[in-house]
Length: 348
Image (cartoon, rainbow, N blue to C red; front, side, top):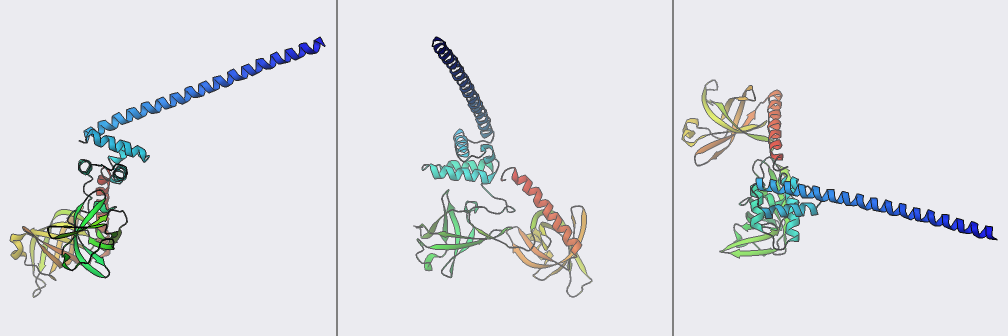
């Protein structure tokens, strides 16, 4: 009997020892795990502190205020976005600002405008398509359509939530409050855009009628031109062909302002208007240097635009060979890519 009691006590003592050792082991493992989590959190906190310090330094270098930096930092992190990207890419910046405007009822329009200006996001280059109605420039003309009737309009103003379209002749316009209207406009050197929006309010001031329509990102874009074109600044020798004497060519010099595989725009001072004496349909020979190659093409004047100090002629190439067309196409693509690469540094 005593042997059994001793065996039980010996087993119990051994079991207690093993349990104690197990508890100690678990405690040690948990302690090490907590220490590990603490180190990870500490490192994350240090990294975040360092990144924010670096971010605020970048903000200062870009001429932005500390408040602007705090806004971009806060809402970038809320969206899970890189705050540094919002300083370089317009699309990322606009997402952050949309979140700020949505969450902060007392957001500062003036501060947002200042941020856009300092970051170079206040305008969109012509070769970059619009991605939001916020990108439409003030005074952009267009056509508003409602129930198969059109009205001339212009973008009168805009803020972070709304665009304000002025009806140029509001005498015959119906009450459009609460109605969904369609607005179409042509963006020079880009495309035709069509947007739809519900008129939330009508503002009348000084005889003007202005429609208040919310911003959105849904716009239909219709490519206007068969060929993409690029701005240039190069001399062009223009040979004017006489209709009476096709063999007689009068040579003049103008400045090319843009070119595509379909044609070229040439401008001259208004003082040379009589000297050039070109009209719609005038037949021309064009000689110019393009990216190291001499081009000599025939063309016809298809439009004339007179400005205060210059007169510009839109010239369509005629009988252009496929080799020459391909050369110009490749030149335009190459130049557009250069511009895109430069724009990505600021607009993305």
